[in-house]
Length: 148
Image (cartoon, rainbow, N blue to C red):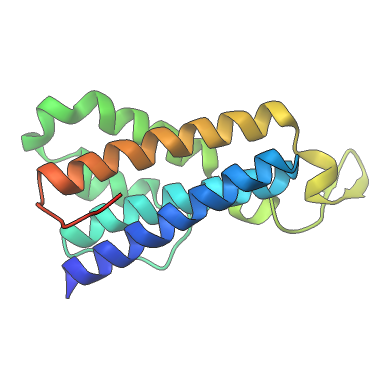
């Protein structure tokens, strides 16, 4: 069942990165950030599922650290995992900030008023990296039947 969930999370991550790329073309930067964050979250959750770990949380850097990064057997992948952790930390809270109005500088602003092209480009770049690395890992290490 965990393999099925892992594949389902991977497929939804793939859909999210596609939506992020579409939003970038439309210059809808808050949507780029949101769907990029969702891609990263779901790709990491696919990996966690292979360890039989399920989480409903959006900010999952602690769970990733505990179950993926800390085990000693990942020595050969440690750099990639630290880069993934860095992206998880960067996206922390962005699932909310990219969707809901908030107060900034004493004013109520919408996500579309706040997120810039630079931030959206960085979000999409991070999502592409995480998705690519986790896709590779799911194929090679876990023999998950992924067709890109």
